[in-house]
Amino acid sequence: MIGVAGCLAAGLHLACSRSARLAADLVVTGANVWTGDSRRPTAAAVAVIGDRIVDVGSASDIEPWRGSATTVLDAEGRRLLPGFNDAHVHFVDGGVQLENVDLRDADSQTEFARRIGERARAKPGEWIIGGEWDDQRWSPADLPTRQLIDDRTNGTPVFVSRYDGHMALANSAALGRAAVTEATTDPPGGAIVRDARGFPTGILKDAAMDLVARVIPKMMPEQRLRAVKRALEHAESLGVTSVQDMNPSYEDVAVYAELAARGELTTRIYAAPMETAWYDQAKIGLRRGFGSPWLRIGAVKGYADGSLGSTTAYFFQPYLDAPQTRGLLSDEMQDINQMRTRLMAADHAGLQLCIHAIGDAGISQILDLFGDIVRANGERDRRFRIEHAQHIAPRDFDRFAQLKTVASVQPYHAIDDGRWAERRIGPERIKTTYAFRTLLDKGVRLALGTDWTVAPLNPMLTLYAATTRATLDGKNPDGWVREQKITVEEAVTAYTAGSAFAEFQEREKGTIARGQLADMVILSDDIFGIAPVRIKDVKVLTTIVGGRIVHQRNP
Ligand SMILES: [Zn+2]
Image (cartoon, rainbow, N blue to C red):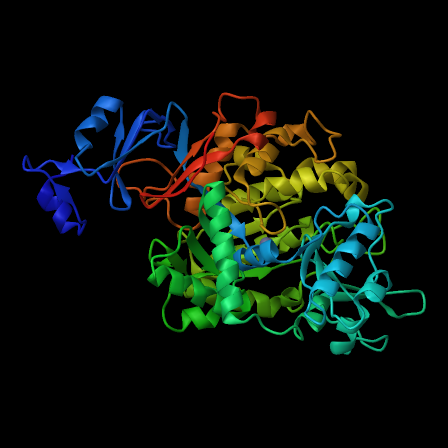
């Protein structure tokens, strides 16, 4: 136990009893604690002062921390874990999606068009965005066209994304505002899908999406604030106590900073803006992990390629169901020397590099660049990250480990894409697809996340996916590429300590141990004791962030 002087020196505001024994602000008792700390893997109670854990132990170890003003929370024997740290989200998009037209579960083109039409009637003239449609739910799985929705939307512009964010459908009104016609050429790293006569169908892939995206009016500050608040509430309810936000705009970060200043953040945010703007952070000397426990910056996020669902992930061999293509390198990669120069400079400045790479050739090229950077800038604890790391060429696993690259992965994509991935890339390539087992066995650090809004933010679905690999169509109950399953404990470790490591915060969070931030969740059921197939139905009953109870629901 710490002495009063020590605590005062540490700047904590304390309630000290006359016996000079400190009282905790919060004590959680009766818990089945999984600490994630190998020195003390299990415990029954936790004491918190301010935003930090001050003690972890048995009921009798923790009893002396209880004072007259201590809040006591009885976990009633339930499982308590460190809070979940989602290593890859699009937080503002998530909040916007919660407020926008939702097409994710539209299971036919007719239903897709009906929902868009309904929205256009409710708010005529106002851009319809968001969407998150999934053509693979439809039979046949044909891409939608502008003609499908033009009649129902008239002059209301529509630009709705596929759920993976790598293609979107524009109606004729939106194409008109963007001046996209049959004469428009495909931009580097993008494709305008055309019909037999050469006219745009309305589908724009990757960099071509920007042709329309840039004419959509910017979000008003109040809209952005509302979206962030919605996203925070959603995260609280799911036990997500930290998020790592990929490609936020500066306006997004400004909203986070405003909420942090007001003490209204309830999820910790590590923001990684676009790599092309690396100099904005570097020029004032910011380095990875700079900021407060609530909001940090100092990372950059880039793209090597597109996605499997949009046939834009970049492979060594062509797609089986689209043999004319092997994917698309991103526009940032179109001049690989410029990409190398930028990343090398960002690394030299001490910024962390997080690069989206999905296809085997995309991943390989990024590992090449990482190797070049180490050779040029020297060895350092830099924690390169490959975001998604979905389809890894067998020869690249060792390199992945040697370069100490963190694999920032989203297991839900595996049970989602697993419905159709084999048709697209064949039986050989799927063996090293979402290869979580192989990555761990090779000594690669995993960080878990969702890529929300691409997948649901709910950590239970991620844990379910990583441990069962049971595809969403119910066709692989024993697991799709089942050799790549990981255990519940491995998945939870990756989702807490692993994600904390990926943002240089393992000394601050990710385990339940003395000195760590008091970010904890209490679950409705013991995920270590039930069959993994049941994990998807488990609820987070209590979420504690920085010692504050921010969410509570009845079992
Ligand atoms: Zn993403």
